[in-house]
Length: 187
Ligand code: HEM
Ligand code: HEM
Image (cartoon, rainbow, N blue to C red; front, top):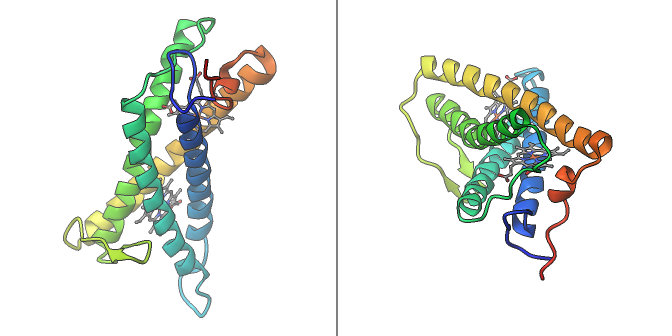
């Protein structure tokens, strides 16, 4: 087993980061969609508690995304299977690129939302993050919309990406999914 990527296969670190990040993002989307539907006020503090956990997990996702981007830029990028048609290669690479954009845009728009609403964000209960912007009702409303639509876009892309991976595994029976599961063996 190798921790590094090669031109043909993903290494253990890229694979671990891919699946940790996938779990975090799916949890954040499910949590986000569920919590916004809960009632605002009253004695039930479920909504506010979930929002607090959502922010902490969202910040952790930003941290993991930064580590992942650093690892990705410093590593070899395995080629897609040569048997794929050109349009699938272009689409796959484009979706991967958009994923990287969303991994940053989502938490940043979340932070912007909290900052514009003048609600402090604590980083894992250790430090309070500085405000990114001055309080603004208008920016708060806009950033909610941006955050929501970026979340929907991420959900749709995950569906396409995971669907394609499963189709390659179960229908085409090629090595695409296996490449993201088993690191290459050290020679
Ligand atoms: C990759 C990270 C993140 C993802 C995938 C994500 C996803 C989502 C989704 C899908 C929603 C539901 C949107 C809706 O239907 O209205 C939501 C809501 C929300 N998110 Fe995030 N989020 C992330 C990070 C963050 C961060 C870092 C913060 C703040 C520091 C944050 C703060 C919020 C808040 C306050 C809401 C509720 C907005 C409302 O009341 O309408 N999120 N998020
Ligand atoms: C939140 C969910 C996900 C995100 C953001 C995501 C993102 C990515 C990205 C950016 C890559 C390119 C490699 C890299 O730069 O690290 C990739 C590759 C891959 N992903 Fe995902 N992924 C997600 C979920 C899934 C799921 C659920 C599956 C399978 C059912 C999957 C299967 C694959 C496979 C097989 C590859 C390798 C493609 C190749 O190079 O041939 N991913 N993913």
